[in-house]
Image 1 (cartoon, rainbow, N blue to C red):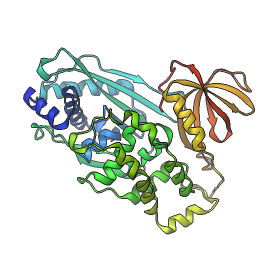
Image 2 (image 1 turned 90 degrees about the horizontal axis):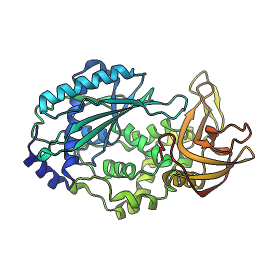
Image 3 (image 1 turned 135 degrees about the vertical axis):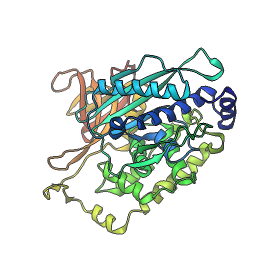
Image 4 (image 1 turned 180 degrees about the horizontal axis):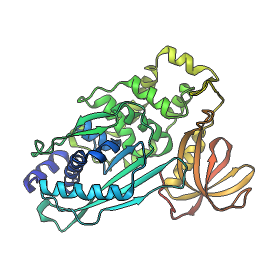
Amino acid sequence: MITDEEIEEKAELFGIPPSHVEKDYVHSWVLWGINQRPKLKQLLVLKGGNALRKGYFPETRFSKDLDFSSTINIDQKFLQNELNEICKLVQSKTNVKFLDETIIKDKNLPIPNIEALEARLYFKGFYNEENLTLKTQLDVTQFDQIILPVQEVKILHPYSDSHDCNAMIRCQKAEEILASKLTTLLHRRKAGDIFDLLYSILIGTSFEVSRREVITTFLKKSIFEPRPEEVKNELLSVPLSEYQATWGNLLVPTTSVIAFDYVMENFSDLINSLFESVSERVRDIFSSTQRVGRTLGTPIVDFSYCPSDIRSKILSAGRSLRMIEMVYDGYSRLIEPYKFEYYVRKKDGVGNEYFWGWDNSGGRSGKIGIKMFFCDKIRNVSLTDRTYSPKYAVEM
């Protein structure tokens, strides 16, 4: 285990509190532990902010969780047993003291085709023998869509015991991670998403990102594959000012700090450059009003998505835990916002953007509860002063 002196040196070098150095250190060792468990290793694919930090860009921001994809279902008992074994392995290698409190829970909204698990590992803070309990969280999205080939990359572990924490991890390709970041810009307002895009594509030098692969993967992961120009305009309409309040809360190494002015000056150019990298042949295919379906030559008809003004109002309400009033199917409704998502129907390839909210009014059916709303049928959205206590995770 690293010494107090090394933690202090790293905390000063990175410009972050010692507790976050401890978490970053443990993240590496948990990934090492997963590599020692062959069955679990084959099920989990690292994604998100920590995939960028631990697999591609050692100087990028710190991320609080380890996010994984799995293309199949993972049994909760199996996952708990595996993580308990990993804790024992890591403790034997580092003397990090894990508590016997591994918690696995289902974190899902009741949304078809989306399943996720949350695992929490607790350990005793080891800097200066702190009487402090810290947490490592693993989020696993099951039946996740992975488009690009999964990579095996060496764990980036910027600490003195890197020779011991030496393992290959299965990781989404950097371009797919960044494509997902583009999608999340339309569905939530988290400063880390914009930071990851700007740093990875414009600033980081340890890995060269293919802009063309980022944008073509994004178009495949969203419903906008037939109409890149439309989604480009949606991305250019993202209200950057809404990210400024939390920009300073990002945990970024001192050498990689990005001023928010840089975001304002470079975001539009970045989006434009990404779309310029789409070949002319692909543009011609996507510019038609219809395209051939992915299966059996089924024609794909129009898709629907939220206009940026409606999406922004709903996102703002969700972030402040305020209800919205909206008209849907001719009925006025009082809604608690929870999540946006894209979904393409397998039977005909038709794609839509959906909004999930708790309907307190009932609408046509009179039923109160969580409902999926077609975004193109939402009208007259207004924020209210009424707050709500979330029944599920608010992913905005």
